[in-house]
Each structure stands twice: as structure tokens, then as C-alpha cells.
Amino acid sequence: MAVIAVVDYEMGNLHSVCKGLEKAGATPKITDSARELARADAIVLPGVGAFDPAVQQIRKRGLEEPLKHAVASGKPFLGICLGLQILFESSEEGTKPGLGIIKGKVRRFRKERGISIPHMGWNQLELTQPKTVLWEHLPPQPWVYFVHSYYVEPVEAHVRAATVSHGSQTVTAAIAHQNLVAVQFHPEKSSNIGLQILSNFVSQVREQVAA
Image (tube, rainbow, N blue to C red):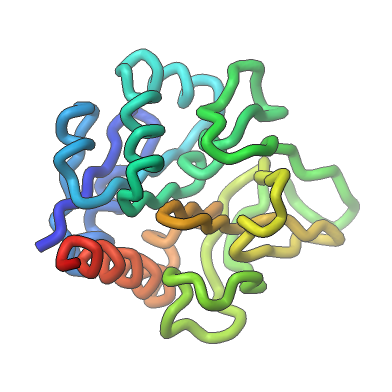
């Protein structure tokens, strides 16, 4: 059974993420150990909260370089919500540099009549990389659950795997590049669609382990 390290830096709802991974057939292991990250078959970086405290906690635990190394090594990697945003270079939410694994910035939704900030609740994805492994066995425009006031803006448009519209604004909802995938929404809160997404990730991990 695939062992998936779930990164603990005091900024995520680890229990619900682990429960979703278990349902998908994986063995999740909550850890803040660089050694455990290196041993794991894959890594999930969840996150809930603000940008600056998140990157500060990552650096305080000495996890920045191990995470960068894991991505560079080709290990399957899934970022969730804030775990997507901190992969970028910077954020309008704070002043600290992000991990810089993906080129781009995190921006705040513009105020607009008739929409709420944060963008919270169910919304439909527009799949811009429909053949990405995460989207296997999903309907064309799946409904998933969001809670966020900020969104990522990648420099390289080709990494964008899905978008979502909130009012007149269409923003990146997921990225995918080689072994790295990351989503702004919460698959662990997205019912059967979210479970399928986690199952797809676990299947990818199993295939890589078996190769």
C-alpha cells in the first residue's frame, strides 16, 4: 500500500485529508520530518490559514529544501488550498517569499458587486488540462468545494489545469506540471468528486511505486 506523507506545519486540517486518502486506499503518515518525506512514496501538502505564517512554519521546521527536493526528484506531490498558494513566489496576503517552486504570484479577489469574498461554497471547474491524472473518471465540469479569498496567478499559463469563475473573475483553480499537482479547492470536502480526485492521485502513486 502506498505511503503518502501528509506535511504537518500546523496549518492544515490534517484529519480530514488523511481520512480521504485512507478511503482512496493509501496509508497517510502525518509528519514534519525531512527523513519521512524522503522515505514516503508521495507527499501531500495541505493548508488552511494565512500565507506568511504558513511559509514561516515550513522554514522553522526545515522543510523548504526537502519539499523542493521531493518535487525535483519526480515524487508525486499534491498541494491543497494554502498548500497550492505557498508553492508560488509571493502573495498579496503577506510579505514573506513563498517557496518559489512555481513562478507566479498569489492575488486577492477584486471586490465586485454581487459576489462575496471569500469565495466559499460549491462551484464548477473548467478543466483546461482535461487529460491530467486528477481528472480521470470525472464529469466535464465537476462541482467542488472552495473556501478562499486569494487565488494563484502562474506566469506560465500551461501549468494551469483548471479554472473557476467567481463573478466576472475567472481564476486558476488547479495546476499540474509533471509530477506536481495542486488544487485551490478542498477535495476532502468535495463529496464523491473529491474522493475520486484523491483516488486518482493515489492510483498515480501506486503506478509509480510499481514501475
